[in-house]
Structure formats: structure tokens, C-alpha cells
Image (cartoon, rainbow, N blue to C red; front, side, top):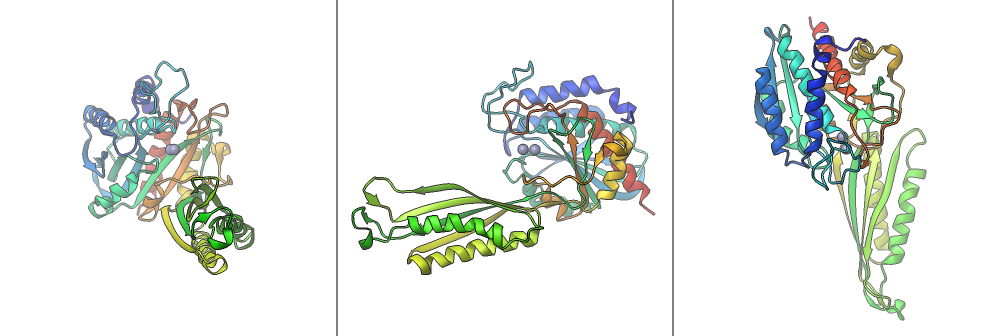
Length: 385
Ligand SMILES: [Zn+2]
Ligand SMILES: [Zn+2]
């Protein structure tokens, strides 16, 4: 098994690090104790670091000669849910849970840090980014805003995510888009309120609401090519307060996913047109706002990752034709700034899905993920002149 023996030798210690992190999750940008714990581990390894973003930190390992700068990223935050695994190391706080495996990602990057501490004989600089607030809190943007790409000329950046229900020895590399974009929209439709018995004297907004909801789906069916992917979901409708009052205002909210920036543009434009058309058809006011939350994760160096993954799990266990996930990842912002790849590692076919209250990270990924990072570094170094 081509897991790095130096990493495997620390498995029991790494497992207890992961399980400790699992027991005390922190949410969003408030990863204060987690960051402090990571710093203590890095101190023990003799690796320096600096604060970056909000409660994120960047460790730096200099090689023996100048050269390429390669960054690796782990997310550190948990989710606002109550754990139901019954595990001895389960979260001690109901309402906070490592239900996405970021405890495992943090332990994996620490495992790689330990490996680097023993292998500084390379040309270049390795940066290890431990990031807060991946789960919709803008952690990556805070890191970028704090000058990551101004302070360092990063040539490559890599990341990984555990992925149920793929097998625990499988690695998934997408040749292009790995994960979808996520956008959000609000539409406030304003008509004229009045007595339910005289709709002709009012301007009830619900007909416009129904029209919008129905026709939003025809954007997916009729404006997006059958070869492209797009999801539009209406997730909230708020309006009205009584059986006998026609309200003057209804708010619709929704969520959009695509794997292609061109489709993203098309959906935004089409939804805005649909909203505008309601004003003409129904005589209402339609205030539409569209917010781009995450771009798609687009892998620019899949071949490097495929080669590195094959050395760890064998070519037959590297899947390259899997569909991208329609979920999003703020790692996408880094891929707008530099080259790199985001690899999924199977969490086991019997694993609960991520974000489920019975989910747990598969500790074997620590060995596979850290070995993958070591191989990715080799892959980059061997590509240098
Ligand atoms: Zn998640
Ligand atoms: Zn996650």
C-alpha cells in the first residue's frame, strides 16, 4: 500500500487528533480554539505560521532552495446540527457537529505537515492553509481579502474533501468542473392589498408569484442546452397574514446551481427578465436581486492529481469520469486565482452522507489524503525545469 510509511507510523496519534477535533466543533468564522489547537500541533513540529483571514492560519515550510510555491488547504469548521452518532468522541455540544468531515481534513493537513517537517529537502515553499468558515461563511474570501495572493506568489493550490458514498480506497478527480456554483436570489412582488371579496379592486400579487415559480423551471427546460447543467430551486415564499386580506407584498427566495459560468450568466439574466415581465403582465412592481455566492470549482491541473492519486491508491481506484457535485465549495475562489485541483476521497460505501447527523469521517483518509498531498508536491516539483 503506497501510503507514505512516515505518515502511517503516526496513525494512532493522527486518529486521536482527528477524534479530539470531532468532539469540539466550532462553526463559521469562529474557529478560535481549533486554530489554537492547530498552532500547538505546528509548534510541536517546528513549523512556523501566521494568522490570516478570520481565525484561519497559514503555515509555511521552506525547502532547502528557492523554487515553486505550492499551497494546500484544509477547512476547519463544523455545522449547526446535533450529532446522533453515539460515538465516544461525539460532539460535546448539541447544535455543533463536524458533519462534513472538516475535522478529518484538518487532521489530514496536519499529517502532511508532519511529513514535511521530516522532508524539507525540496526546492520551493509549501504553504498549509487551515481555513475557517467554509460552510457558507465566506472563510476563503476573508483569506483572499487578507492578501494571501499578494503576500505569496502561489503557483499551485490543492485541496481535498472526503466523499461518501465512494469506497474508502477511491479517489475522484474531475477533469474540469468538480463542484457547482451557488447563487441566491430574492424577488419582492408588490401589488395592492384589499378585501378578499373584491380582488378586482386590488392588485393581488399571487398570480405573479405562481407565474414566476412555474416559468423559472422553463428556463432550465427551454433555455439551457440539454448538454449543460442547471438547477433552479424556489426555497421560500413569504406573504399574507389573514384568510380575508389580499396582501400587497410577497417575497420569493431561491437557489441556483450550475457547473458552467456561461450557464450561470444565462440563468441570472433569464430570471431577471422573468421578474421584469411580471410588471408588464400583472401591473405589479417586481424587485429582483441576484447574489453570486460561490463560483464553480474548476480543476485546472487534473492530470497532476490523477498521476499523484494513482501512486497512492492505484490507477484502478482513481475515478475520472464522475459527474460533478451540484453542491458548492468556497475552494472555488482559490481556483480563480491560481492553478490546482480539488480531489475527493471516498469515505466508505457504508458512510452516512455529509451534513447528516449520523455522519463520521473515515480516519483512513488521513493517511490517503496526506500521502496524496505528498505525491502532488512531488508531481509539481518534478514538472519544474
Ligand atoms: Zn459541508
Ligand atoms: Zn465540507
